[in-house]
Image (cartoon, rainbow over all chains, first blue to last red; front, side):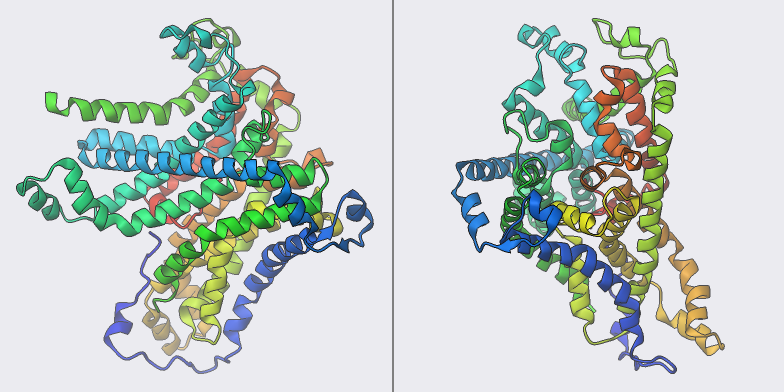
Amino acid sequence: MVTQAPERPVAAAAPPPPRRRRGLPALWPYLLVIPTVAGAGYLLFYPLIRSVIISFQHFRTGELIRGGAAFVGLENYHEALGSAEFWAVVRRTLVWTGVNTVLIMVISTLVALMVARLGKRLRLAVLAGLVLTWATPVLAATTIFQWLFQSKLGVVNWLLTSIGLTRFDGYTWFANGTATFAIMVLLVVWQSVPFAALTLYAGLTTIPQELFEAARIDGATAWQVFRDVTFPMLRPLFGLITSLEIIWVFKCFAQIWAISQGGPDGATTTLPVYAYQVAQSLHKYDLGSAISTLTVLILLVVLVPHLRRMYKHEGADQ
Amino acid sequence: MIKRLPITLAALSVLAVSVFPVYWMVVTAFKPTRDIQADTPQFLPLHPTLEHFATAIDSEGFALFWRNSLLVSLGAVLLSLVVALLAAFAVARMRWRGRKAFILMVFIAQMAPWEALLIPMFIIARDTGMLDRLSMLTLIYFMSTLPFTIVTLRGFLAAIPEELEEAAQMDGASRAAAFRKVVLPLLAPGLMSTSLFGFITAWNEFAFANALIIKNQDDRTLPVWLSSFSNVFGTDWGATMAAATLFMLPVLLIFLILQRRVTSGIIAGAVKG
C-alpha cells in the first residue's frame, strides 16, 4: 500500500512544536496548491459540469458548430431511460462487471494462496510471470488477443481443433457476439489478475505464521483456515481490491473500443462505450452526455464508499 | 514429492497462461512470414529474422508517432511532477485552513471517471481550438496522473523528518535552500518511481488520444496507431506483433527498473487502462 509512512512517530511522542515559522506568511500553502486547484478546475471539474449541462440541452452537430444550445429540461434523460436499448446496455454492463469481478477475485485469491505455498524458485518464476502480464500495455494486449483468436492462423483455433473440437477450424470469433464477449472477459481477467493476486499475496505474507499453525493443530481443514483465519485478517484488503476492480471493470473502455467498438451487434456495448457511440457516431452529444451522467451516478454507488475508505486510510490520519 | 505435484502443476499452468500471450507476440515478431503461416504453429523461432521489425519501423509515420507518444508522456510527467511537488509540500509540511478539503479533492480527482469526460473534453477542445493538438493530450495526461503523484509524494515527504530541514535552517539556510539541499535528494527515489508510473499511464492511454486526434493524423500516438494495425499492415501479423513489441518495450524497461516498488505504488490506481 502507499503508506510509506503516513504517521510520524516523533510527533506522536512529544507535543507538536509551534507550526508557524519565522518569515513564512500564511499565504504560502495557498500559493503552492493553486496550480493543482486550477488544473483540476479546468481539466476535471469544468468538463464534468459541462457534461451535466449538455445533458440538459439540445446539443447536436448544429449546436456544436454554431453554439447557442437551448435547454430542454429532462428530455434527454427521458429519451435514454425510455429506450429498451439503454436498459439492455445497463443489464449487459452489470453482467460484464459481475462476471469479470467475480472471476478476477476468485482466481487471484487462488493464485495468491498458491504462490504462498510454492518453493522459492517456482514462486519467483510465477511472480515474474504475473509482473510481465501486468506490464503489458492495454493496446499491446488487445493486439495480441486478436492474433491469438485469429480465425485461420490463430493459435487458439489450432489448439481447439487439434484436441478434437473440429468445429473451431477457421472459426471467426469476432463475428459472434457471445464469443467476442467471452474473449473480452478473458482479456480483462488476464490483465487484472496480476495486480489483485500480487497485492493479496503481499497481504498474506503479513499474517503471522503462528495463526496458521494454531489452526492446523486444532485440526482445521484448508477451507476452514481460509474462512476463519486468512479471510478475516485480509478483509480490509479484499474490500479495497474488490471495489477497485469493480470500478475499473465498469469503466473499461479502451479494450472494448480497440477490439470490437461495442460490436458485433452491440454484444460488447457497455455503458461507457454506449455513451461514446451515441455522441461520436450519431452526433447526439446531448443524449451521450445524459448517458454518461447516468453512468457516473451508477458508479457512485461503489465510488463513494471506496473514496471514504481511501480518505480514512490516507487523509485523515494527521 | 508426489504430494507437491498438484501445486507444482497449478503453478506451471498459471505461469504458462500469464507468459504465453507475450511470448507468442515476441516469437511471432521474430518468425519469417512462411513460418507464421505454417499449418502447425511453430512454438520456437527456428529461423529468427528481423524483417518484421524493419517493416514496422519503416512503416509510414512510425517514427513520428513514437516521437509524439514520447513528447506527450514526458511533458505530462514533468508538469505533473512540478505541480505535485508544490502541492505535496503544502499538504505534508504546512497547517492551513482548507487542507483537509484539498486532500479530499485530490482523492475525488484520483477516482474521477475519466471515461465519462470524453464527450465534454471533445467539445471543449473543439471550442478552444485544441482539437488535434498534442498539447491538449499532454494537459489531460498531466491531470490524470497528478492526483496519484500528489498522494505518493506526500507519503514520501511525510517520511522525511522535518527536523532535518529545521537543522539546516538553523545553520542559516533559507527554507527554499533547506528544501533543495536536504529534502530533494532524499525524495529522489520517490520522484523517480512516481514519474515512471505517470509515464506508463500516459504512454498507454488510448481513449482520449483516439477521441481528440481526428483530422491531423500526424499527431496520433502509438496506441491509436497500433489499434488500427489492420489499416497499416493488413494481414501482416509478423509486422503487427513487431510493432506491439516495440510499443511494449519502454514499459517493460520501466518495470524492470522499478521492480519491488511496483506493488506498493500501483495500489493507488496509478497504472490501469
